[in-house]
Length: 454
Picture 1 (tube, rainbow, N blue to C red):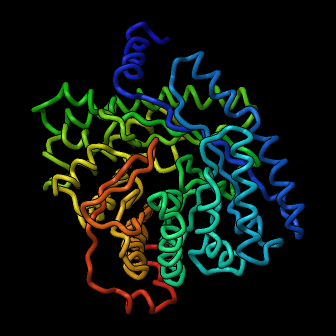
Picture 2: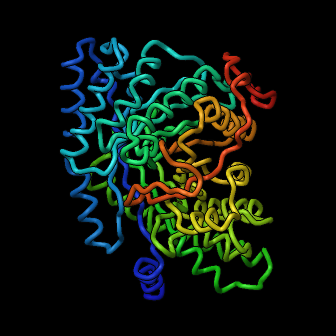
């Protein structure tokens, strides 16, 4: 039984500590839309998405009103478009038309974002994959709600350096194509190692091939709740600190589980996973960086930061796993710069560098996320940064990602502004030494020895 103390505690977390369900994401398979005719393909995609997700937003709003739990985003993920469009698409422009269709569907059903404009190229690039990657800059420039991802590596398969090199060029082109909007196309594009098929968070969500026809994934967040809880154990030892984080994560996850099951039942769509990720927003008090400061570092980036983040990530997962049997996705802690006011302040104070962020990604949920870099940063340097991050994921058997935003015409000391959940970011300096000879080698970096477990 839920007692009145628990009800009041949950209300306090929502009203005062920024607890929210960050997203309800409906995954939709488009495999039965595949057609060799581009026109018919787009018609089938439109019919499939609008039929499956027609009541998604309405249902989320009803749950919000009935339970008083904010649900910030309603989203859709679809089967990787390079697969869906392989038979019909002969040019990058053909894929751009699919992006337009996805964007129109997202607007029609009212969701915030639609993900799955994606290619999975860890082991090689097919003709369709190549065309889709070529189309990404234009697709993200002419749409508002479409998000794109490219998976270039896995622990089992290694890193496709041809794809890494190409994505450096794609990110540069996306930045140039949307330069008037501070490179917002790059804010909707992520490069992955060990991409997961049940991720409800953008920009990396896509509907995995092993998923059912439709599925509901829920992502819940609450960095403000964790920070507030940690105030009660200032000066106490690490055992007490860890217990507090675990208990708090348990409570947050139970809220998400309630929303997930309600959405699944009302939409008559199978429940997939609950992603417990401390995903910040630009709002003051809703910051992973502030949790790290509460643990004891003056600013993220100070000595001890990586250890504090590792502790936080692990305890969040332990508490979540006790609360739900279906924890999945990327669960843990996100460290996007532009979406976290505390991270922005750390960069502005000179405490946090790109190299320190890379070290922190060894122990967090994803990787180098929403980081603005000088507009003069070369495609080769971007590819080198991607390769470094992919290597961390491959060797450590974890998901890592890169979402860099070259700010065309801007340099260190300037900033970019996106608004909403995407926030704003100061431009961070990038190591200026050249890596083009390394990137241009091509081929694949083989899987590590510990990947061979069969």
